[in-house]
Image (cartoon, rainbow, N blue to C red; front, side):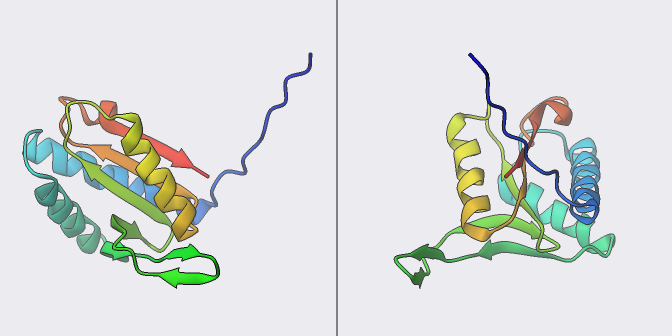
Length: 135
């Protein structure tokens, strides 16, 4: 039996650079604040870091659901859309669950973005709370 493997083209260099800026900013925020605060606090601090770095982003970026040829406003919002290239979802949970990954995957599919970062700030070491998803 032959195993089929699918290859996904990696995101372009600009998208990768934006993702690195987000991750570096997340490390700064986590180093200063540690775990245990609300998602909204980490989101505000991450937004501050991105703004200070001159990185364009939208906070609570809404996007429509395309259904049967219609564009429906369904209240979907990603925490941050960085440079119109990277979706960022912030969590403060004991452990990331499959539903968190599914949420970000859905946001990527519906928004047309290819790279998403799932950031769980409720960890001792932030490196253990970062999940990267590429479509």
